[in-house]
Image (tube, rainbow, N blue to C red):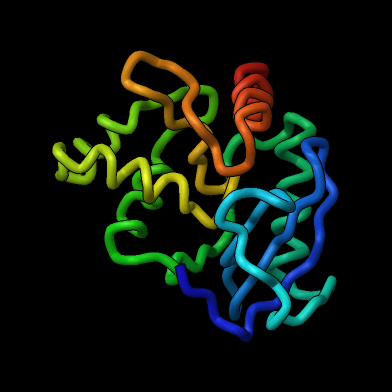
Length: 164
């Protein structure tokens, strides 16, 4: 994945640990739990707390964790991924809060039924944790499979959403 060096970022302290939020222009480009797999190095980016997209993201994440929000209303920049990854990430946006779907179902939704493994790889590279709900994707038999932010966080997010 390639991210622009002109990203602006800030830290966010959530109940599941510290996170890094990143934006480009008016859009949110990334949300990562600190230390998660595939988290890019933020050294070339500019640290700020005043970027409007970052402030709005932090507010909506606070509402989400407080059980007051089930969907996000943010402009997203998915340009860090390939065309295929972006297609998968857009499909994830259609998974309602409180529900799960399988990798196979996502591959069917995007018209590539034999691309289950590639879908799994794209889900794992999702740069927008929680907002693009990759935590709602499970194995074919409903098993909770890997999550770049850690399986314990995936479980916590699904439990949080089941109480909304």
